[in-house]
Length: 406
Ligand code: PLP
Image 1 (spheres, rainbow, N blue to C red):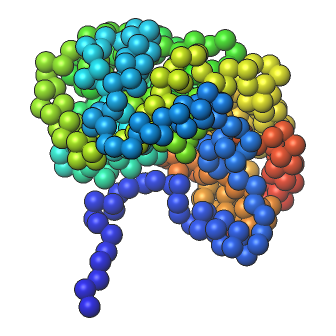
Image 2: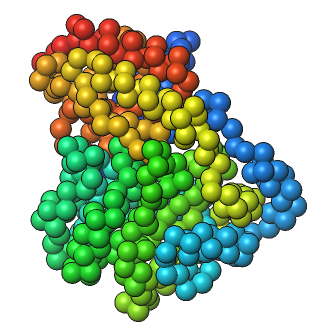
């Protein structure tokens, strides 16, 4: 009988949403064990609900959404997206440069499939949101990671970025605000990235899905606004800003000078048409979502849930001997450092697995985000404060005696 194996294109795909830790968590859940999940940025299970106007737009448009739409999306959605990004300083010719997607995820894969030939390189942050690395590998490209510096609020290390540019480099990916660090990049850093892109003729892909989840009065600058004539692709969506990850509404915007990228755009149009269109009902939520400044505003201010949970997790983590964490300024992730020497950690995945088995709390290891050393992990701080307190109490207790077996 004929057997089928995984495509060799997936051999270098590093995408740690699955893997041995998740398999173990699934096994434990199937066994009836209760697990506290601090591993995935999905607001709904933690009692964050989509706002009423979004739910209403969903039901109001049921009838309008029965057929396929234009492959890039309905005009109402793309007009609203255009207005939003023009407001952020992007130079966008019109709605023909806007593509809706089934979440940003679909578009990340699409832009890499359309761009890369075997062996082409793409610069990506370390740590990164690992779908980016996976999409590059899946498209036959080589992911090359530039360092983000924990000592400097996790900003990209520009010297390291420049060092890694070669003849094969096609693009730089910027994730700002960043998952998993919660860092928001200042204008000076973005200017330096733009300079490199100009000098080496690279495309910038900027994932800005958390640009409406900012704290402490920080402002978000779209990198595409710094040099509006530079060709950039900017990604955004309502999964996080409107606590509606399940509806799958995202988009990308092409901005700047398109004179050298005609062939690439032709490929993108082809890929966009091949998936027919994104979920039409979800497209109708976009104008509603972009009417305001963003749904979770009050949650991000003192007294609000995201803000208070951030304060709580930051304090609790830094109170544990052997752990330190930079304070995130956006989103709902924190990326603490663990003293690997002290706990004899040579595999951060094993550390996460050991903690899961003993305390039934699920984290994600730092190497899952493409950092090269086994000394970080990510926490999603969406759960309520009592759960955060409980889980960090368990972590403190676990680390009192933990030494990883050699
Ligand atoms: N980009 C980043 C940085 C993310 O963290 C996520 C989801 O966690 C996505 C993109 C995917 O979002 P979407 O729900 O729009 O596919």
